[in-house]
Image (cartoon, rainbow, N blue to C red; front, side, top):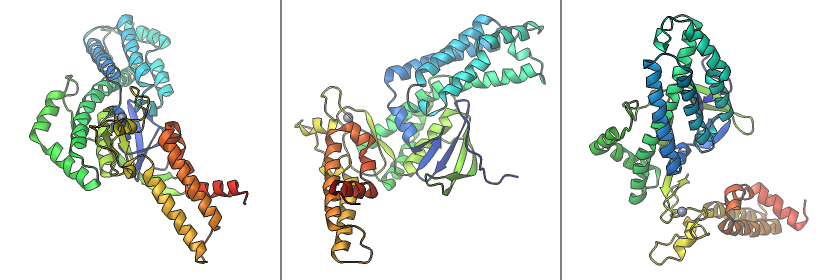
Amino acid sequence: MNLIETKPVGDANFYKFSVDFTGDDFILGGKTLPLGIITHDILNIPADKLLYVFKTGDKLNDLYNRLNAENYSDELFTSIWNAVEKILDIIGKIKPFSYFDIRGEYEHIDLLLGDDKIKEWQRSFSSLPIPNINFVPEGTAMHDHIIVLTEFIKSYIYLCADTFNFYKVAMMYFVNLTENGFRDKVLLAGFTKEFFGKEEVAEWIEELNATEITHNFTLEPGVWMAPVVLENKNGSAMLGRRIHFDRMLNFYVTDLFEGLAAGHYSWQCGICHRFFFMETAHKQLYCSTVNPEYGVPCAYVAKNKLNMPKQKKKDGFGYAIWKKRYDSLRNEKHKTNKNLPSAKYDVDVCDKAIELAKRHYEEAQIDFDYAQNQYEQDMILRNLINEAKEALGKK
Ligand SMILES: [Zn+2]
């Protein structure tokens, strides 16, 4: 008997995957990510790619119907193989799908539909009186293989349709959220309750379903969940919950609602209309990525446009981290000045660290690579102290 799952999570395939949830994060395919990021990534899928995925999924659905209606043919199986690979070629390179085990996914396609396997399918079907998937005798190995194959194909059909449908729902939700300006947990919860409680929203979602296969679009996912013991970065144990998903939509909906419950949300930039991701109720209005039209970040564009509301400095990128670090360093300096027993650092080290923190904050305002990849790390107290000591030639 296994009451608590302790084995490392393994599955990260689209047809069957497990995700570990702990605190405000989840772990998928070995990557730790903040709740809500899946929804956010879907909102930022380029429109042309989204449409391509949807259309290719629809073609795959047609092929799946043919598979049920027609007898075996190389052409049909090869067409299915091509359609699945087309989908994977495009989604494998974009978030959130790139969090999954893409290489394993290609291997799996090859196992089910590769050249060797197609020869095997051909041999197996030619031995049947009616070479159709619905006439494979039960209890045979071939029957088991057919079940795996059809589940696999369906997972791709669902993935394509679910992503498209979910995108539309999430888009409507977050555009509305941005317009209303609701950002903290209580407001997020209230808005969510009202939004999804509305009759017209329910009707709209119902009508939205672009394919027949996703008729059961639901906001109440059915999932398998188990308690799990995880390990944090320092090797200490953490308790979490492992959810097994067999359909993308269930994962999307779980991510959306768990994210909102944690106070994570996507916000639409008032300049470029792309969404940026927030893990606090901070009032950042514009994204901090470089606007391709202007060559500077959207916050700068807004500054120079007369009709745009200005973003306050304290609401801008990195300010909260800087302020917190500035306060803690001043506190350290105060302890040293007062000769308190808890004092740890010399006054000149504290002053230097304060100076460095300000420099990093300023750098994060103009260097967006630095802001995204290095700023947070540099602002950790221990790192600032070490950097200050090094600059002063102290040990
Ligand atoms: Zn922007």
